[in-house]
Length: 388
Image (cartoon, rainbow, N blue to C red; front, side, top):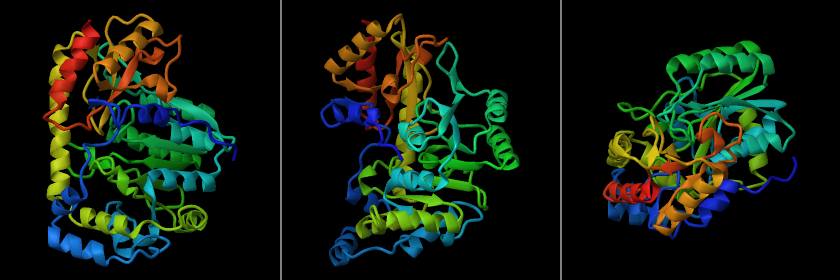
């Protein structure tokens, strides 16, 4: 593997994530405390203190705690705990998985989270872009027929489905997922599902759809840490073929080896009841901020777009911007007013020849991971600056 390039998005986020008055650049939920997570998962303060203070800081099992793996398996129909490897976040899961797949050609929705294409690209893989497009109102969509035609002509050996999609907030329809999955199965390719936002991908169900299917060529990576605003837990998983997971676990012995036992304990408490107050509150925050954003965008004269169908991010355009210089001036003005957003250029998206302003990079990723009480104030500040 070649040396990895700078993680452009992370470098940009680090500049303001801890200092901005209104942090709308992050892709996770409102940050939670350990106490909020545990209390919301039915663990009282005394029990939490007793368990924490008595937890042995030894290695966890190499594959992760058996009871935690069983909870993850239960979220993926057809899987058993032997199909689950617990990892230090989904980034490690994807790193280990791509190291084993060693793909020749990878297809994925574009724009994309850098890790999803950087890892295979630095192993020599060619990247096939499956376009996400926006209409004049900033509503994202995909043409499944166009995707299938590109898959058929390019013949990738790995297809990555990031659903809900970062940064558009798009949730692929069941029909689209089925058609792409059928093509993958027929072609002999491997399907990789990045399902980090699965807990926030359905209006009515705690868990949205998964692309996981039992077999040797279907893998899913996921977590709850973004959805619940606790990325500091650094917990994730990969679900898939046991033999492949064993090879991934062997390489994990050379990196993080095992997951922190405190993080595993908290994760088990969070996942043992999917209708817990902790998950319910996180989902209600998400729904509330989606409603707030949708109402704001209906009347905004400074920006355009839609609230995400799933996940915690969406792509927003700025009205009246005709050049990159004008857009960058708006970004600087937003920063000066305390509003931090992530320009699409930080995700390596935007070409001068793009047919839509967002395709030219004249937009930003906006996150919903802010307290619902503060979100309207942040949006009004954004409106004041972008209209000026």
